[in-house]
Amino acid sequence: MRNFLKNFLLSESIIRDSVSRLMIIVIGLGLIPGPVGRAQATELATRGQQGTAAAQASAVTEFDVNGLKVLIKKRSSSQTVAAGLYFRGGTSNTTAKNVGIEGMMLDAAAEASTHFTREQVHAEFSRQASGVTGTAGLDYSALVMGSTASGFTRTWEIFTDLALNPKFDQADLKRLKDVRLAALRAQSTFPESYIEDLQSRSSYVGHPYLNGPAGTIESISRLTVSDLKQYHKQMLQSSRMLLVVVGDVDTAALRTQVEAAFGHIPKGTYKPAAPPALSFANPTVEVTPRTLPTNYIQAFYAAPALTSPDIYPMTIANEFLQSFVYQEVRVVRNLSYAPDAFVRTQGANVGGISVTAVDANRAVGVMLDQIGLMQENQFREEIVTRVVNSYLTKYYMEHETNGEQVAELAEYELIGGGWRNSLNLFEKLGQVTSEDIQRVMRKYVRNLQFVVIGDPNAINKEIFIRQTVS
Image 1 (cartoon, rainbow, N blue to C red):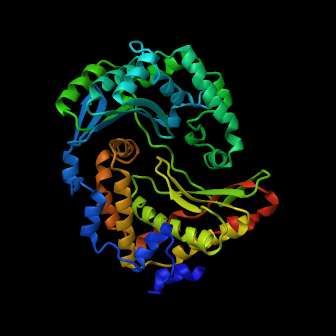
Image 2 (image 1 turned 60 degrees about the horizontal axis):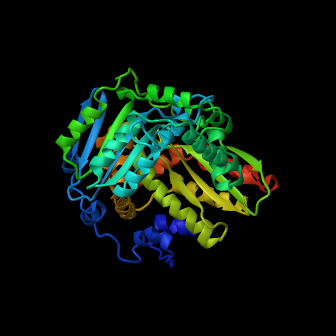
Image 3 (image 1 turned 90 degrees about the horizontal axis):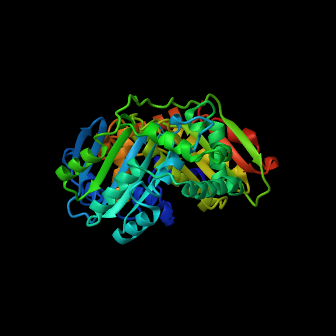
């Protein structure tokens, strides 16, 4: 229903639809009461956080311990504490031969240390209602912990020992390898995860991201305890690391604990460097044949980085696009259950669209139509304002927990130009205009890199690769 988007762009036409997923559109059109202004939106969005970027920044203490940057955010009366010890570089630290080693090293480190056996770690964490786990990504990895406020001191003791003195037990490594290898071997049987693998192989050729953090069957199979120990030694350099803690902690006392734990580690000479930006010269489509009840489809485009001013209008543009493709593909035409549009947060960033559909050509054609209409038209400014307010409310609600705030501070510090930029979201999104949205749609949402799992005979590539803007 092309007229749906045209009405939304150009007139006050009433669209009689109350689907919950489209609440953002319904509010934007004024069919039900929405936010009355930026002041009210601020109150809803911050939900108890300090009202200004300066006030929020004052809650964060920043210091250096022998080259290790430390961020501590004080949240008074919080009943939990979260922390993350981050390692810069991500997939750029590895090669095709040892890809996946970083995640395996962190997973194994979280099992036991030289001072705490696996059984002791599990018993203590169970008693303290706490935990430590490893996570690896494209741009960085981390050993993260969460605990109750009352159990923080003991959890911190174990957390730092796991990070600094992991045992790397042979039995633990075998068990972790078996789990990872089983997942890798099964990956192609689950289209939802397999399409991400295919997208990476297609879109990241010649880029460090091609060495995905999960690894390959070959690289994981050959890993040894000796490999993990050597890799841990290589990564345990303060110049590679970042520590973030959020909770109701005594900052001065914690600083002393950080100095005691990390003040002796080698500083190293690591120099962080942004990954090369992605660039796609032409639209493409690659089809992997598979007999399935439906076709699985995803496409990437090169999106602005977190450090780019364009990330703010791109974020709001995606909010509109996400709702439009849902309305047109699912609600109006019933072509798919969950069409989607997304913008990720990576050092070399991407956005995209995804859909599962029997009639893949029609579904993709409709989605490209929505992109084209957004590139050709501008929204009324009052609607942009209300969508921004709605997005901010959702964003801040999703970042209420200490764990989410640790992740946010780390993300901006590591790939977003510094943690203080995380405090500018409200201001920057508030400056987004309809003209900005149209401009970024035209600049970035082009040369889509499609991957498809399904019936090759059902795919008309000409529909997929048609440009929505010249």
